[in-house]
Image 1 (cartoon, rainbow, N blue to C red):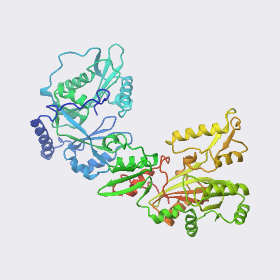
Image 2: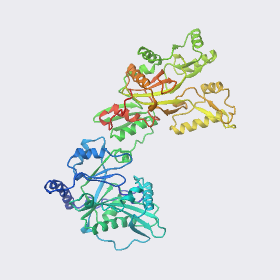
Image 3: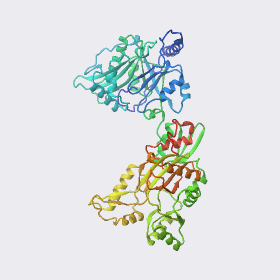
Image 4: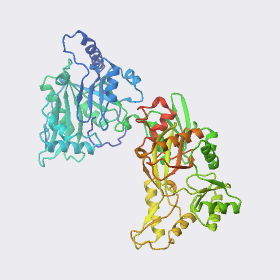
Length: 602
């Protein structure tokens, strides 16, 4: 909560004699906090506060020692709104509280420091160049927010500062540059007596932030002193603050001013704002985006991660004495039998057809006359290897005999067995099913270029390929191969042709992400019949995680044909759907935080 100056990486400071605090003060504080709670039942009437929580703008400061029901305290923390940062302070038994919701809460790695007002000594010199005063205007409030933003802190609605500036339990101070009038720093103080009738007569300091471009030294110290003197004038016994355990610069200042460490703990919720405090150091290995997405979600939940082979996307997750090895979204929960069903596209099709699911007509290439007859029957076909992934060796919209022969030879470079399939017209729809529940649906569109009137088709493809690679961490590129040349020729151009201005040309027929396709979320538009078909298909293969490729006239209509199943679907690029969250839920259900699905998607 406390930020003094921009964080650097100084050499480790030698141990301070006072870092551990005065033992007698620590014992007194621990005893007084416990006794204050126990004595609450002996205080008559409504003198003893209960369930105190103060809105500070950035979140609620929850005074945990006023709660007699730990479950209620946990419930309050879990009600934290998005974008806020609630803090449960003065938690007596943090281990007990964390045991109630280990996946939702964590122990904040901060120290608590206390300044006893009886021991405080004012500064000998007054600050120069700036003055500390109360926050007075909306402009002050916006300036404070700008400092928070620069420090990476949770911002506060300026209206909150304005409407609460005269409240007795909240004090907002700013430091003003006397030469320019610019706000250089801000701090918030909470008067515990006015906030919840604190029988210990305390106060606390929060959200100290100094503009890193401030031209004067000693601003942070002046802010702390001014707030301490403000509370001392009100007769408060002490002022507490919370500071990150490794913020040596701030800790040095507080100890210089007479603050001493006390055994007080804070508990927070596991949210994106707090992630760096509980997830541990990031994985250093250079994993691809599909593996990294899952690894990061596991780390957020406190699941151990061991990268086994970064290049191949292999990693091991461990939690509660149980380990599961994964390769991206393929885990040990997928059996070898289920994987082999997906791997062989002909087997996949037969299983789907047996379950009454709509699949395109298909044959195995080999008999030239029969292959040509199949082409003539369906006019346009797809040629693809029976085994393979990422769109390799696939030719779409094959119409001529010679074109068919070339496509078969191309597919055989990937797999000896080649399939010829009826071309079903429509959009390419990818459905992600995890634990036999639909999680995400996205339309995948093949790459196309738009002419400028002076660039060649090849130049435009190269530019688009670079953009797609940059947007996907190098995962999506348009290969300059025979299939791309064929698709360009079908559009009436060659690679060295100048594409007229504003004219659009499809450069691949497949919408696979790895060959330059784009992906667009349509989960909320999905027809229930498509959801049912996807779940039924996953059960037919008996696979816990699968990406199913449908061809549909529209995601909002019930018509479909299933063309493929992928046992290792890429779970990235499906925002805002929780693909990574549902994957980790499947592997370690005890770590699931929220209930799912939020609505019936059967």
